[in-house]
Image 1 (tube, rainbow, N blue to C red):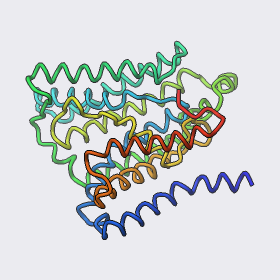
Image 2: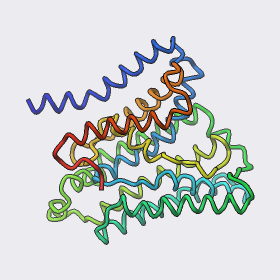
Image 3: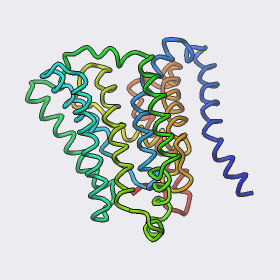
Image 4: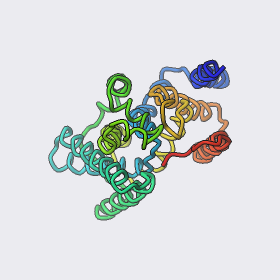
Length: 314
């Protein structure tokens, strides 16, 4: 019986995705599957999926980083500044990734070394990141900072598809076939037991955060390319989108052995198609998107909080 329940739990996210596509495809009169709209879905899903793939590693630990959105804005504006000064897109990408990796590494290290909740440590960087973006945009006399280089390559649908495939394959292999992914689930199940069985707790707690940092840095470049600028609101609520996407994909917030990398893929497309399809069918307007996300989050909390075990990340 337990095996049957587990198998049903594994297929529910896929059933949900198929149901969302079917219902909204019919309700939109087929517009959901138009060439233009598919390109839009891929564009919107790319940065979210990239970050969600990295977030699986820290969610497996039973941890959470709520600084993702502001760090994306901060990394994006650093990348834009470097690109404008040097004229090098590659250097800008490197700066973005270094910024996010250092930030994520610091959050993970401080959290495990001082036995602090990562969600609390990340609050500091959420405020710092937002403050940095506000300061730089103010210095440059506006509410946004524009990059002068042509970033059209990152707007290409084929480029987005290639990056999605490459990142998915690499991170799936790391998660399933290396100690980083396996130990993350063990630590998320029982941190004390993991340490007593010889797992280097600090090392294998920080490594998932570094992986998240890499994905956030890459995603920041795609976010930057969307409007070729970073504003004070860039990345706002992105960490919430990641959480919703992972939960829709069947990711347990408490982490542990039930965590799956597929949650990022299924959940991201479920969330993006749901939001996109509802806009197409006029069930919600652009002004109501935040209310829509809040409603989904409330439903998720209601469902997960019915369980007696730990349900929220630390």
